[in-house]
Amino acid sequence: MFDIDLSKYKVIDLSYEVVPPGSDDRPFVIQRGFLADMAYKYDVTKTHSHVGTHVEMPAHFFDGGKEVTDFPLSTFFGRAILLEIDEVGQNPAITSEFTAKAIGNIIKEGDIVICRNNDKESLIGNKPKPYLTPDGARWFKSHKIKLLGIDNNVGLSKDIPTGRELHDVLMGVNVPIIEWLDNLDQIKNSVFFLMALPFKVKTMDSSWARVIAIEDK
Image (cartoon, rainbow, N blue to C red; front, side, top):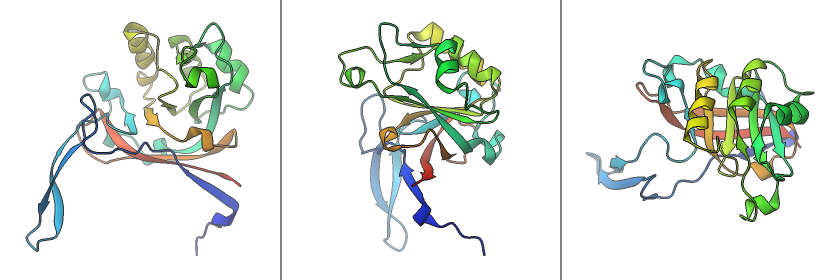
């Protein structure tokens, strides 16, 4: 019988907790109703595809781009590595030079890259937060990662045009992006197992996901 000894591993929930009714730009409004047997159900839910922890697909930016159901499940789990930003400094841009120095010695084809901001001054707002760049995205592309993840302490770009370019680079080669991760500070190992399974639904540019990391204790 297949078995996993969980005494050897730590499971970390990296999912952002959504609390109804959400916010004006990220609503999650629910209304309670009843089934025929008078059991409860929530039959009216107002939200959108980028509320809480979610996985963005190429369909988010491209007409005819791949949707959630176009990807094999193996896209959303596997070996993950931490790209750690310890010091933001004067230039918060995450370039190819930065990524090569930070993870060039451990990255493998098919890896999932999770970005974590460790700069305390940046986290409390005394410094700008680091942000990814198209140059850094091209480095990820050249190393054939399969999934990229960030929380709200790392930006996808410094502005809309470069953000669009970054998405073009990654989603042009079908690399989905996990956004609104949480609890990244709880990860202790630079290499771990990650699972980010999106809700299986057609015609979605993005889908909500419960994301976990599993690492050696």
